[in-house]
Each structure stands twice: as structure tokens, then as C-alpha cells.
Image 1 (tube, rainbow, N blue to C red):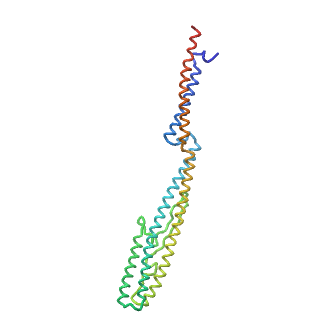
Image 2 (cartoon, rainbow, N blue to C red; image 1 turned 90 degrees about the horizontal axis):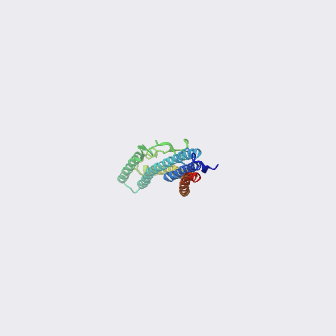
Image 3 (tube, rainbow, N blue to C red; image 1 turned 60 degrees about the vertical axis):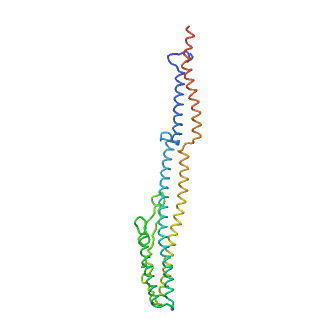
Amino acid sequence: MSDLMRIITNTQAMKTRSALLDVNSKLGNHQYRLATGKKINSAGEDPAGYALSRSLERRKRGLSVAADNTRNANSIMNIAEGGYQNIMDILQTIKEKATQAADFALASSQRSALNDQVSAFIAEIEEIVDDTTFNGQRLIDGTYAGAFHTGESYDDELSVSLSDSDSVALSIDAIDLTTASAAKTAIQLSSNAIDTLSTLVQDVGEYKVRLTSKEGALATQITNTEAVRSSIEDADFAEEQMNVMKLQILQQTSVSALSQANAAPQLVLSIIQ
């Protein structure tokens, strides 16, 4: 006997209602994805995809913080280099004064004046060493040493050690220009100090090269990681909108079909009249 001849249980209406509920559920999912911008909004939608996207999100965040650390480290190196460069300028001036004082044509009073200037320059070097700091830490007094965390892994670090650049470390604390002989010695001492400081600046430059390279690598890793996570988790708006339009049409036809299925038992009346 045809289902249309049964009026107690309207099988066709029940099937149509079930299809309508399924369409409504799918339509709601696609509309929610459009609202959130994500294809996976809960672990129940795609357990494996959800776990993988969270793992990629963890990695991206770790890499982002590492990139911030690397930029901070580069800034610190810039500050240290600036301090070294200021001292380098003073050392060049000290050598000029020593060369001037070594000349036989100068009187003792003139050498004494030059010596006073050099003493002031040496005091200025000490102030630069004391004032070149980051977060309250002195950078170029020989005490700054540690490791910058420049990667996602716990052991991905760059060890840094900045050398002392005060007058004692550069062996210019006892420079004397009061005699021509002492001034000649001062020329050699200031030259040696310039060479020593050049090596310290070179070390900072090498740190900066490594940090800049690391920063570029981290930026690439962040981009690639985010691209993979996006392909797994983010919604394709064109596809989602297409599915919404298709389901909206099915929703309308299901409602129409349900209405017709509910009206079908009325045909029974034509039999019993």
C-alpha cells in the first residue's frame, strides 16, 4: 500500500522534515563559518585539523616572540655599537693631541694644556661607559654577557659577550702629554687602543649580522607556518557563500516539499466520499 494512503503516519512528511532539519543544520554551520572566518570552530568539526591548527598556532606565537627578542637584541647591539663609536671618536682625537704634543716646536705650557684636554677626554670615556645601558644594565663595561632567546626551541639561543672599553681596559688611563717623549708613547698607546676598540666594534657587527639573518629567517618561518594553519583552519569565503546559497535553495524546496507532503493525506478524502 502506498505511503500516501496512510494518514496516521505520514512517512513522506517525516522524511521531508528530516531532510529539512539536515539542511538547516548544514546552513547554520556555513553561516557560522562566514561569521567567524574559520572553517574549524570546534574540535568536533575536525578533530585532527583542530589539533594540527592549534599546534601550528603555538609554533607561530613562539616564533613571533622569538622575532621580538631578536629585534630587541639587535637594538641592544646598536646601543653598544653607538657607545663604542663615541669612544672611537675620542680615541682618534686623543691620538691627534698626542701627535701634536710630540712636536718639538711646542712649549711645555702648550703640552700641559693638551694634557689637560686629554685627561678630560679620558674622563668622558668613563662617562660613556657608565651611560651606555639598556634596562639598567651597562653594556660596554665588561659585565654584559648572556644569551638571547632567538628561536622557538628552548635551546635556540645566541650567546653574547661585550668587552670592557674603559680607559684601563684600553690602556690609556696613564697617558701623559707633558713631555715630547711621553707624547710619543701616548701616540702608540692611543693607536693600540684604536685597534683594540676596532676589534670590539667588529664583534658587535658580527652579532648584528647574525641577528639580522635570524630575524629574516624567523619572518619567513612565521609566514610559512601561518600559511599552513590558514589553509587548514580559515574559511574560504567564496566556497562558504556558494554553499550557503545552495542550502538556502534546498531549504526553500524542502519547506515546499514538506507542505505538499502534509497536504497529501487529504487525497484519502476523495476515496471515501
